[in-house]
Length: 324
Ligand code: MRU
Image (cartoon, rainbow, N blue to C red; front, side, top):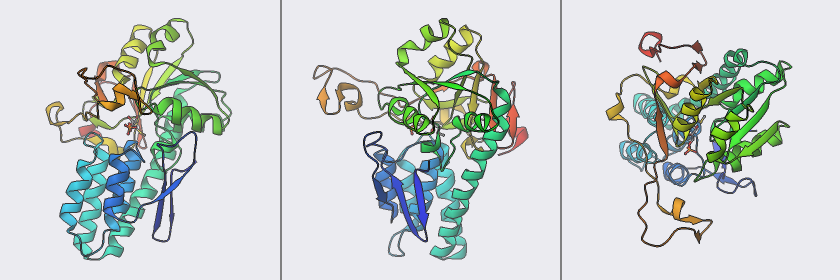
C-alpha cells in the first residue's frame, strides 16, 4: 500500500491521522501544504516526510521565496534527517537549473530512490529472518512511513515473498499510537499474522519467549550507529539485550547523518495534549507538568545489525567508511 500518489504534477497523500477508521486523500500543491501535513502528522515517518517536503517545495510558485520556504519546511520536524536532506536536494536543483520543472524532477527522483531503497532493504534484510520467526516492531516503519514496503517492514515482506512464515508483534506506540493505528492496519491489510501489545508489555512478552527478533526503523543514524527513533525504542532495545534477542535497525542511506554528533541532534518535543488527552477527552489533571519527547536515542552497543539498501552492517559500525 502506498501513502502517496503522484499523477503528473498532482501529488496526494493519505491522511494518516484518520487511519485506521477512514482513508482520505489530501492534495499537496505547495510548500505550505507540505509544511502543514508534516507538522500536523497528516504524513509521518522519516522517508515519507522527506518525499512530501520535496514535492511541496518543488510545487512552490515563483512568487514565493524558495530559501524561506525551505527553511520553514525543515523546521516542521527537526529529528528526521531525511527532511533536510530532501529539501536541500530540491532547493539545489531549483536554484541550479532555475526552473520549477527541474525541481519537480528532483522530487520525483527522490520518490523513486526511496522506493528502490525500500525494496533493497527488504532483499538485504530478509536473510536475517528464519521461517517461523516471530518479530516485534515498534512504531510504524512500514509502507505508511515510506513510499512503499517500509524500512523495518520491508525485510518482513520480502521474507514472506521468499516463502518464510513470519508472525509479527506490534507495540501500540503511545502517545500517537502509530503501532496500533498504522502498523497493525497495514500488516492486517496485507494478510500478516499480527498481535498488538501495550508498550509496557514488551519485557513480559519477551520473557514469555514470544519474540525471536526485533526490527525497527530510524529517523537519524549517526556514523557510529547511534540511532534516533520513536520514543520507546531505547527501552525495547534494552529489553531485547536483556533477553538476548537480536535487535535490528533498517533505514535508507537518506537517514544516515555522517556530519552530526549527538549534541547537534534536536529531539522533537510535541504538544502536552498528546499525553493529557485521548481524542479530545482529558485523561490527566489540568496543571500537570508534561515532558513529551517524540524520539529517543539507542546506543550502538544495543544494536545487533543495521540494514540499508547497500547491505547489512554489524558492530562496530563506522558509516564514515561506508559513505552515505
Ligand atoms: O513520529 P513519527 O510517526 O514520524 O515517527 C516515525 C518513526 O519513528 C519511524 O520509526 C521512523 O521514522 C522510521 S520510518 C521508516
